[in-house]
Image 1: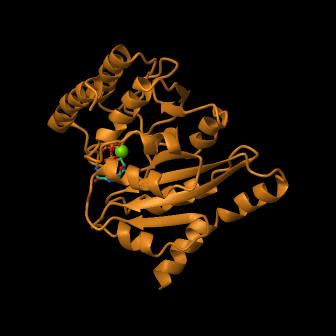
Image 2: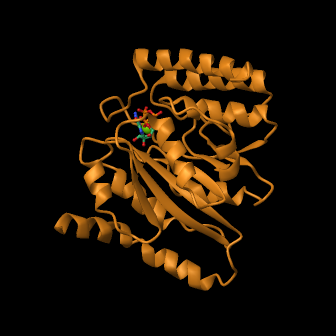
Length: 264
Ligand SMILES: Nc1nc2c(ncn2[C@@H]2O[C@H](COP(=O)(O)OP(=O)(O)OP(=O)(O)O)[C@@H](O)[C@H]2O)c(=O)[nH]1
Ligand SMILES: [Mg+2]
């Protein structure tokens, strides 16, 4: 009980900022953003992730909601989320672990916004970049804005193999689907909700992260990019995409490209 109170107090501290923003902005919303937080065993960062997303101040005319999806965590994340009771924050609990893609699909299915953005619960990305990505949106016209970790020639990485794998996979996708992306594997992807719902995306593991950009490009949608920050975690801090797992993931991504190319 005490834990529930402190959870809500922690997240609610940011509410004042949003409230002030709302009353100084008398215009009615032009669009709404659903911030989708996918979490699986992120007890160290989940509450900060929600607090940061909840505190985000969007450009005038934008409304927002936060949707946290727990993928059947076993480290206490789920219990923390069950205790969250903050207006504007919705929690969805998966009955069993269904892969990250399934969490994203749940978020987009539940979204009440015009646009949805994926925001990882492990805080490798910064909520402060969300308003900058929203600024790049012309509601009704823009379909997708991705956050890029390499735009402007930046090289932010902890493990060189991850950096070069992403560069290579991005180049191949551009070649196959006619894009101009600089970072296909980025976490923060802001996309129109109705477009995502219409794409028939896979719920398998991390497939959606790559299938989504490929299908957007294949369907003739433009993907804009905005430079964002990135704080990669180390293997000791819980990084999963390293070593052979990263190699296997790379091969799977090529398989996803092929499937999308052949119309699957
Ligand atoms: N690994 C994993 N992450 C999930 C799952 N469901 C949701 N997530 C969340 O999806 C987000 C991205 O997952 P990560 O494991 O960090 O993926 P990544 O950033 O590509 O790889 P890392 O290098 O491990 O950080 C995190 O916030 C996870 O908590 C799942 O089933 N498995
Ligand atoms: Mg991560």
